[in-house]
Structure formats: C-alpha cells, structure tokens
Length: 548
Image (cartoon, rainbow, N blue to C red; front, side, top):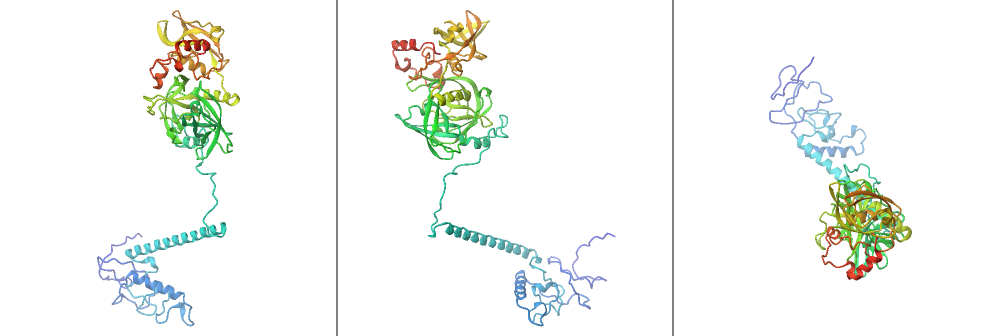
C-alpha cells in the first residue's frame, strides 16, 4: 500500500495517535524535527505539560564542549559512563552528548530537542558551525605554513656555514630557458598556424648581434644553423666590424663571435661563436622553392635592440627583384627576394623568416621605406633560404663565395613577338668567350625568361643568375628581330669582383631608375657609381664588362 505524507498541521493532535506523536510547533515557528528517543519510559502517555526552554546554539555548543572535557576526565569508581556527579545518568538519551538536563533520570523532556552532534543545529547555527569549520581549516593552513617556513629556515641553516647567512650558491645556466617543441611543430600548418608553439620552438635558435665599426656601433640579428656555433646573418650587419662581434642568445647569455666570411653580392655572412656552449639549438632549414604567395610567415629578430621580437604576416610575392645600396652609394646586393608584409624594422636584418611549421625559409635583409627615418610600411624582403644555404656552405669552407657568370651587360626594355609585348633585359654587350657568347646571345637581344621564370628586367635576370651555381645549365628565351627563340647556356664562375662593393655590369642596367626606387633609397643625383667620372667609369666598365 502506498501512503502519502499528510501536510503538517498546527495545534494539539487528537485521536489514537495522539499519545505517540509529539506536539508540533505553532505556525510560523521553525524548529528541527525531534529525534526519536532511544528508550521511552512506560506511562509517558503524552507531551509534558511544560517543555524545557529552547536554548541558543551558543549554549548548546558550550554544553557540548563541557561534555567533551568531562569525557576526557578519569572515570571515578562507581560512576558509570564518566557522567559528572550531580548531572544524573544520561544512559543513551540523544541529548547525553550535550549534557542536556532531563525531567527525570534517563528521561528526555518532551519537546526538547538536544541535537545529537554539533551539526544537528537549526539553519542559523548550521551557518555558524560551517564558519567554525572553515576557521579550523584556515588555522590548519596557517600552522602548515608556519611549519613549512620553519622547515625551510632549518634547511637553510643546515646548508649554510652555520653563521646564519641567507646567501646560497646559485647558477646562471638555466636562466631564461624554456622547454621547446620540436620542428616541424606538430599541429601547426599553413592552413592553421599555431604561432605560440612555433615561437616557443624556434626562439632558442635566434640571436641578437652587436658590432663596433669605425662609424660606431650597430645591431642586427642572426640564426644558429649548426650546434657547433655557426650563425648566419647579413653581410651589412657585420661588415666593417672591428674585432669580434657580440652575440646574445635568447636566454640572455652573451658570447663572443668571429666573422668567418662575408659575401656582399648576396648580403650574407657567417659568424662562428667562440667557446660555444654545448646546448645550442640550431634552426631547421626549409625549402624556399616551395614558398607560395599567401602562406603565413613569422619573422623573429632584434629590431631597434628589442630582442626576441616576433611578427607575423603572409608572403606577398616571390622572386621579387630587389637591390640594396652599398656602403659607397653603389648597388650592394641584387636578390630575387621573398616579399612579406610582416613588420620588419632596422635590427631585424639577418634574422630568420619562418614558415608555419617552424622551418627557416628566408633571411630578412631589407625593407622599402618612404624615407631614411621611417620604419616598416609592410614591404619587407628576405633572401631565400636555398640561396643562403649555398652561400653559407661556401663561406664556411673557403671564407668566400663563388657566383654564376653569364657574361652580358644589361638594361631594362621591352620586346614584342607573336603580337605580345613583354618586359625583359636588353643585352647591351656580350663578353667574348663568356657563357653567353658560347650560347649565341647577341647585343640587342631581349631576354624575357630564364627557364620557366619570366624576366622583368636587368635586375631580375641578374638576381636569377646569382641564385644559380657555376656549372648550372639554363635555357634563355630571347626575342630577336620580332621572333622568340631559345638558347641553352652553361653558367661559369664569375671572377672575384666584390672588393669595391660594386656589382659588375650594374652601371648601365638602369638600377638608379628601377632597383633603388623599390627600396626608397634613390638619391636622384645622377652621378656615376662610387662618384666616378664618366672616363673612370668607362675604364672600370671595360675591366669588369660582361659580368651580369
């Protein structure tokens, strides 16, 4: 049979159950439900005429503590249960633990509700009891801290020399270090780059470089390419350095380095760290031939002395012909660069450009600016890492690099064939016995492509040739007399001509109009390279002719 509890009612209860049911409180008064007594004396037919007065929770708690203290006293002979004399036998009455007064020996007054433990109090006392519980926990925490502090202090005295000094031996070895992910970084791709993890994985391979020259001090960046301490950077970062250069690792350690070799034609250099630590982390080098327009990239470097600066962007263009200005005002380097919109500023030079997996795809080297004082305007350029690897290997092996040689002087122009007009590199002259001469290139030809790559002008062709090696074969697409023909050529080694900082054959290639404008560095003075007179320039050109 299923029963449903009846709603609570106020007032005396009549009927056959009246004797067994205690009186309920009047409406509006809340009391805890009375606990059923363990032993009900016979003859207790109803509630007491006068119930014991209701005590406050504080009074109940005081009796509880008193009973606990009494329970801890030695039990006197002939006194059962350790009950204090004069308090009466409590037996197993629910209120015994609190020492509640009963109306008779072993009897609990009807209507009185002595809680069985501290947590049986009404709602308000429950909140107070909860607060006490938190107070106990807090006190325990304080004690724990005090004990812990005492232990630390004791250990400090034991580890010391007994003088009570707080000085302890420290180490600088692990300062500034962090755990790095491996490259390629798992979970980071061009479709979903995780730059936080990439930055953590590659940061240890990036360094800041400081040099002292006759003109003063300079700063740049570099990337560790070998755990023996080889650092790749730009030529213009370390060229003219007096003595060793100062290299600062990401974790703050400062090391000395010496320049192994430089190459002004590609603006690359290699530095060897002296007394290199054995925990260096070399960067993973990627393949710049796989770089595509629109893919995400990250540049890391030391712009304006702000080490470990990370910026991100995308590849804006590839094979962008870029020429930089040399120390004496002439053309310094010509590169088919990777163009990016990641913020690059002075001091980023020589730093690595990473793809979304943490591989180096370029060495940041130059920016286009509106003036000599302006910073990044979103036009940055990086030397492709494939070219950087080739030059670095040669610098490490021989201290200098060799470059491919075609044997022509060039200018910018256009050519029309098959009803189509294209820009190209106009051949002004061909060096006798050069690869170009052997391939049948003639003055007046317009070279519009090398291999499958379109050539947009003299600077573009020069950059393509310099990215190749001596002995490489190439196919030139040439427009001659309104017809397009293909010529096969095998490149040779260019004679050493970098001592003056001028690039051979550049003087008549229109670089002042095209290349320097790209960099925002055209001074518009119209002077010959290096301040030479026309006669001096012509003599120099005759000596260096044919090396484009």
